[in-house]
Length: 131
Image (cartoon, rainbow, N blue to C red; front, side, top):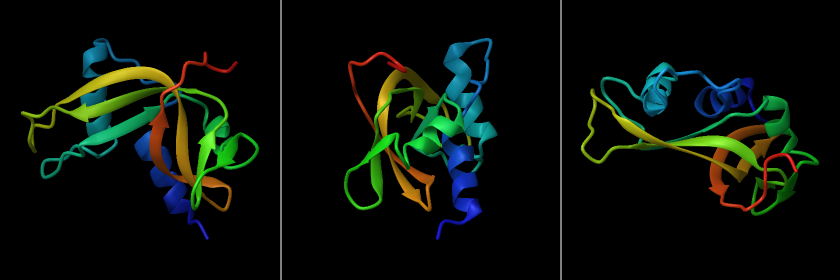
């Protein structure tokens, strides 16, 4: 059974909706990784994806909006706007620095009791968002 904490953790780590506005888009990942406690004085998470969609639509992937793949993983029918944050190779804690790439792609998530609890990966696609 999924705990509310697992879903809350998924939201903290992977959902930024509406998208946080930064005066400098290049600083988006640096700001968000710190704000969401994935870049700390002792640890830098190497890779993280932020989804810029209403949690309602993300949660729908666990139901009719997704197709089962393997285990508890489901692939979204729709594509989602997202930002992939990657730790720069020369960056170490406590000075975590990131580069970000924005795109629109399908996602694969793990679900428990109808709620997303883990973002597995993105699936590059050629579809337009919300076809």
